[in-house]
Length: 150
Image 1 (tube, rainbow, N blue to C red):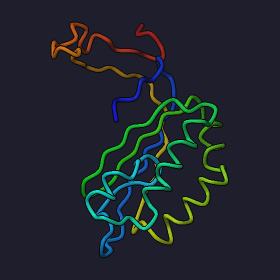
Image 2: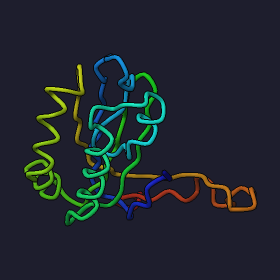
Image 3: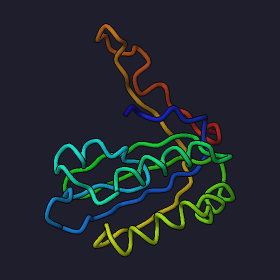
């Protein structure tokens, strides 16, 4: 996984934070939208169908109009941030039939708790090293704003 390449703001972020059920053989945490399933299956040997559904959701989301990218991390909690070009695109994804099935399975089988937060990204900036390990000379001066400062 890498950091998502997003456009110049504004755009939208959906932040999905989850806690997995602690089940025998199940991974201790993750999230079903973006986890490709490899970490959960590797750590536990079994993921109760979670990894397959997560891979399906990532593939399905990537085909949705308005999808811009995704980033995911997990330890004791899972956090996935998906990026979208509009609130309408987010709403369409929420209503997608495969996604609705994953949501139902998440509530009944995989999660003890989750929270979804939706926000508008007004500015972003970053830092990166090139393939040889040298720092990007732009650093945080690579700031991108939805409205130029003035």
